Length: 414
Image 1 (tube, rainbow, N blue to C red):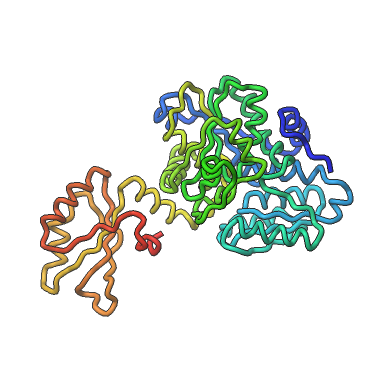
Image 2: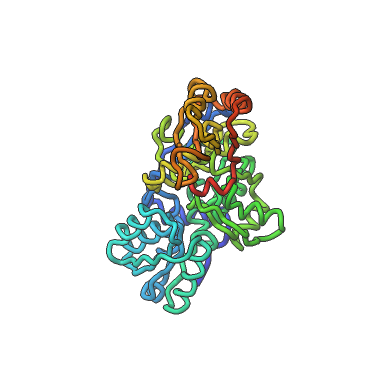
């Protein structure tokens, strides 16, 4: 098979293939982010793409270029959800059978959409606890069945297809100075970089990774891809434990900076995108715009790519919780109440400050619900209210212990 070279001309040829198929997604200025950052910040809304993610660009470009013999063998892929939807869409559009392997933590909404988009031509397999485990299973399936493996990021055909986002955003914002791009395995940022650095070398390219799955940051530090010991799967669309063999050197050589974004900051940005801009972003889709508030963006305009909008509404309770913890508005305490009348009233009337709400109250010792230690969650009006609350706790005769972030207790709360 002839693979495209990783250069600007290949990205442009991929754009010719995709132009009749994919949507030209909107790009608009965010007054909120513009005010926060101090220069114009624009959002490139790939959450409004077919299958609600840029991933369809790379998947369709790869699958549409298969030979007749390869199409007959079918395709298989591993995905955290979005790439699988892109593969499913391409299979249905091109009449090719496919299998999509996803990890068990893939949101239900993404799994359902894969089946729907596949229109009877795509089988869904759920296995493993991470993208990397699903990928290993998908490679085994491809080898056993003879199906063509459609890589979500580490294939030149995928990379140049995903890179076609760059052509659109430059047509829409020709004066852009910086582009912020989310990173999972690195396919999107690699495709953008090979085109931008050849055609518009003055434009800065910033990559944004989730702090709990910073495989590209680890690769850059180690001088090559290294497997992460642990991966936080909250930002499921970018939860990749090993950077790509092809994408790593491109990021190393062409990307100006890679930053990490905490899962709490991602959660806050997801909520602000929804509440202010009306953009329904999944966690990975909020990475770039969250990063805009963390870096020195320099001269504007800045474009942040909203990479996907496949978020399961059932996750919003967790998203709100993570955001409040990140913003310093929600805190948890272990409070030991003495076995005497009025202890709880003292806590409510003499310890809590005005504007503090109890959002959780649960006695730890289940065999004695009336007395003993309790886990208490408190939500504040502002982060600055924490110190006055701690001062009142210090003066109280009650034994009160702040549950620190990262405590195992939070595994029961999130």
